[in-house]
Length: 245
Image (tube, one colour):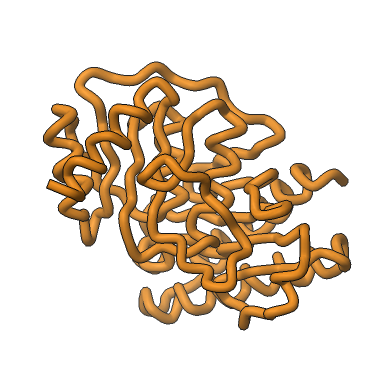
């Protein structure tokens, strides 16, 4: 199995586990989310150690191993992106499995189990044209003032949504046009979404246009912009102007 196929298989397997757990659980949202995080993480990490024993792993649910910093190949995993949404039995949560090589997001898959979808680098979808007005994704619980400002400058409508993976894949699926995030995010939140977005032909970068780099000593990765390539320069310029008035 090649790396892309492995990422897809593990994301789908974890998604099925999470759906079964959710459907059979009558407990509270917090306990369900905690159980989902732990069980999906164990499934993915155990499989990676079996199928790719020489690769390093960076997972939200695992203690970071400093030895990964010397590795060229690092799997970056979020076994349940959108724990709150999952616990609330919403649809906007995801499973992220990505492979970073020399810091670049090379392969990956983002499963949207509640929607019956898994979008991956091996079989990226055809892009959908931008809508008019543009639709800019924001956090459903804590939309950032910067995202709101960019939306106003673009004349865009804002679309609240849950997990980072669900938002990024909404652009690929034609449900939105721009995903801009400016804080509170880590490598496991955006590595798989960035890999899949770029494989499909979208732009994915930091908000200043710089490359997204993975397997860093500090896994904080608070900025991401995913949009059509033709729109990227305009948004990056707007972010610069709004950030430094």
